[in-house]
Length: 79
Image 1 (cartoon, helix red, strand yellow):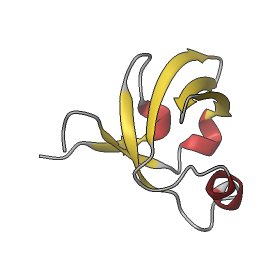
Image 2 (cartoon, rainbow, N blue to C red; image 1 turned 90 degrees about the vertical axis):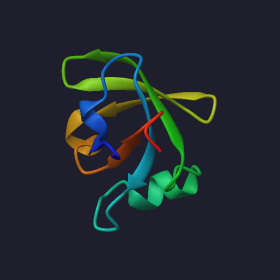
Image 3 (tube, helix red, strand yellow; image 1 turned 45 degrees about the horizontal axis):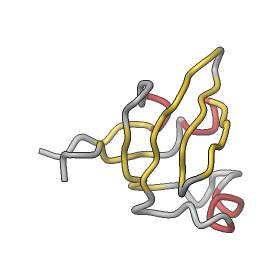
Image 4 (cartoon, rainbow, N blue to C red; image 1 turned 180 degrees about the vertical axis):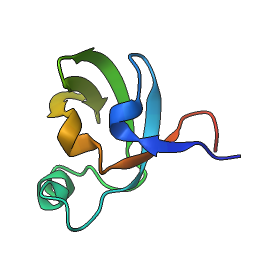
């Protein structure tokens, strides 16, 4: 069984592979420009007050939960 959740549901230390970023999302173009596309592995490093720090392609990004709530990820280890 494949576990697909919203990216903002990843807990500290959990990782997932991006399953879908809605094209209607305001971040779609920005994330695609950074190479953050379907299949990219993301790891939640830290959560605090509606934001989280994610390790993505050897770079740390801080993103708001409101923005990552539309992005779905497939939990690592459940391929």
